[in-house]
Amino acid sequence: QEEFAHRMAMSTPPYDIGPLGLSLWLDFDVFLDRKVPPSSFSPAPRVNSRLVVMKPVNREEANGIDKRLFRMITKHCFANRRRKLRTLLSKPPSRISRINGWHKDRWKKASSGILSTDSTILAGDWADMRPENLDPSDWLTIARELSSKEAQCAFLHRLDRGPPLPRVSLGGD
Image (cartoon, rainbow, N blue to C red; front, side, top):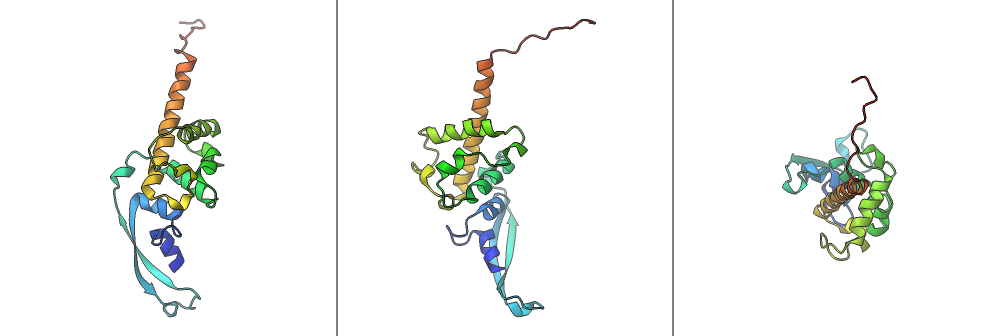
């Protein structure tokens, strides 16, 4: 369907930007090709169709990004696309625990870290924007910052606990 093809290619921002196009953007350049008339199919559908060309691409800016986390963040935020990012990121995705090493408490610490800092990672008012107003590279930055804030929180948590305790032998050795 032509509408689906436009969402894959994110051809008319901000309307076509969503988790599908962002997920494909990580690994492909997506181009719209010819329109296919309904008469080309039997039975003829009531919608127009379009061919899509997907060319694999290695995006340097996406190297080292956790793609599962990226997809989870975008899906979570676009589920309520009329809300602002500040509100969306303050609540953890419902299935965050499916990503190795992530759980609700870590999400809350990491998201509060990027929402509370005066970092210049994105435009100054990015947290007051809606999901469709960000570029794909902005989503990469958010995912990367959440990962680094999460790593910082885990590191600081280990420091707060102090050095590991020595192993105690219970006999036999």
